[in-house]
Length: 392
Image 1: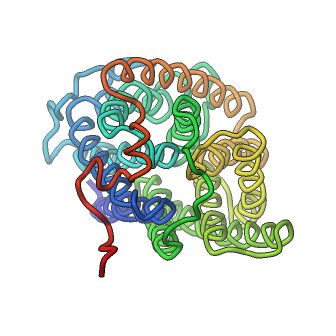
Image 2: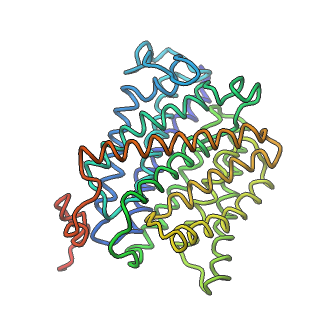
């Protein structure tokens, strides 16, 4: 065990959990109507709790067990055989488990943004739990757990390069979000602006800080690689924020706060897969393109395709993660066959699993709330609480 590595990954684990609670909850909560903000908080919080238990029970073993090229098996279910002295590289394995658990939390939580303001709470929990175990965990095993997409797999000695989750996290969550949005259909009123741009900015800032643990921690060591990953993460986020705001100003005449911080997230998602393989100049290029590319994706999905992916999960996370994965090959840090092939394989698998789960879970619990609940807001109708006292 290396003490410095262990100390850094303990910090990184806390930072990645901080991304979901409270970062993502505030970012998403500020973007919805005032009568739905608590429902978003509840969905993010409940997912964090449920994924923690399921990752402990089965998810970690499926992702990082020794079962084979496709499935990790259940040999490490409930952390069987793992003690405080068991090592994973230079880290206590129980810490590696906890660090990876925070990724298993935020990935299904990202999908929340596609279905806010109209989803059934029971569906959220049942779908998220099954999706994490049957989609996220196997893909994690394929790429990070020594599976068939990693080095020595179907693409030869040089497998796919995905440092911190362009495919594992952002492509899977983005595609799942888009599919659920299609099945749900649009909200009855899609034109209401975010109820609290301030919440959105605070949440985005928390995500930015937490992302240092997300990407820097994925080095799994306290060394120069972690420092470089952290640095390029920051440069990409800052550059994408500026390019988004500039492009918005050129196209619409004004640069908005919500737009600028959405650009931040686009830059962060895009640098995620490449953060361990590129330098600052490449990060600047990735961020500059991401701010424009993801903004155009938002417009395409909202206006041209008329899909109500409410908080633009696919346009920002899905498109950003796919773009960053491709840029690894473009900058010569990975081979094209592995990068593109893995995107296709994981994309097809994610779509199939997500569609099956939406259909299956929809038979057991309602996918969408009724019109009265949607009109009155999920906070009071589903959870019996209000975020704000409207009488005072």
